[in-house]
Image (tube, rainbow, N blue to C red; front, side):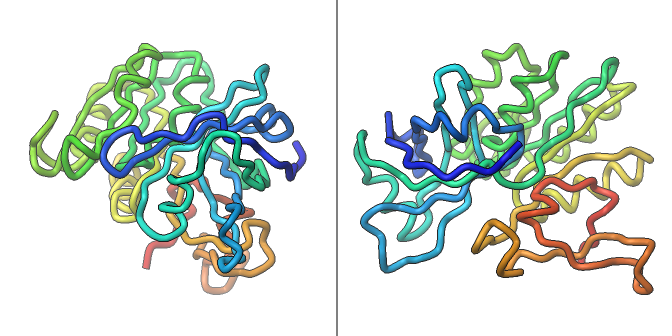
Length: 263
């Protein structure tokens, strides 16, 4: 797999719900190479006063058609600008980047845990699983539960949680993970979402003697390992301290739960 940079025309850019949007791009160089959990780095046109690219997890790809989709939330100047770009506008796209999720072996039950728009990074994993996945989606309220119908269309066993109880289980999404693990003999856990959620996932699987793969929510600047802005602590038996710094954009964003050192 090699990295590609290309001009990717917008095919569609529309609001999904609330502050969440989806943009579909024509990216025949990048799309066929994307693996679940990888990301792309995007430079926005008409935004020259912000020189850094922006990382976005890949939601979905159609390799034969050469299309790639991103789900994003308008949270600042950059994503607000992206939301206003019309079909036909070209984005400067670089990717696919980073290390994604592993392919589950036969005989396991994939268990997906996602918080907020972290679900976008897990969709392609669930889509490519040979076995039906248990998908646990969480959000602050019903308005923050995304892509529910998309996961259901895959045939996934979708379970929902909201902090305020407006839809599904009242509580955090890791409550659903605990229940799923109780009923699943051979789980294969992956997760993406806010770091407090990921820390809880790591704690839960470790207590049960299990492993998981987590996609860390970390700010990235260059996306290619040059700037060292996205370092995290990863366990290493070869280092005197028992850990070393690694760059999320290169060694991750997906790591084994047992590798991550949480401060």
